[in-house]
Amino acid sequence: MFTRILITGIAVFLAISIVPGIEVTSLSAGFAAVLVLTLLNVLLRPILLVLAFPLIVLTLGLFLIVLNALLLELTAYLVKGFIVTGFWPAVGGSIVISVVTGVLTFLGTDRRIVEVRSTEPRQPKIINPPE
Image (cartoon, rainbow, N blue to C red; front, side):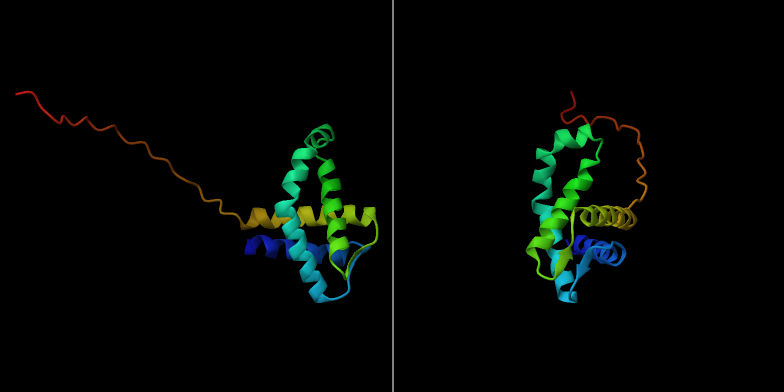
């Protein structure tokens, strides 16, 4: 969970610095926005994905950007000092957050190669041999 918060934090602060229209008034508001967005992604996003599944399939996944933008707007509504000025800055911020989160999650995962060895089957052990 700490790793997820850290990755989301890096992505949100990068979106604040890159996307015009996403602002934060203080550092504590930025940290609160990171915590609220992480909590919304953990609790609310799976429900929204199930409900919006037909639209996600119909748009070949592009509706995920809209869902992420709506979650970013909800975060701005819930956190005082975290400002998203409109829908299009929310879309831009959701794209930046999604890309950065995806890249950092990919780089942080363990991708060791597991070697599977096959062994010869051993002979069955006779418990009660005939006499």
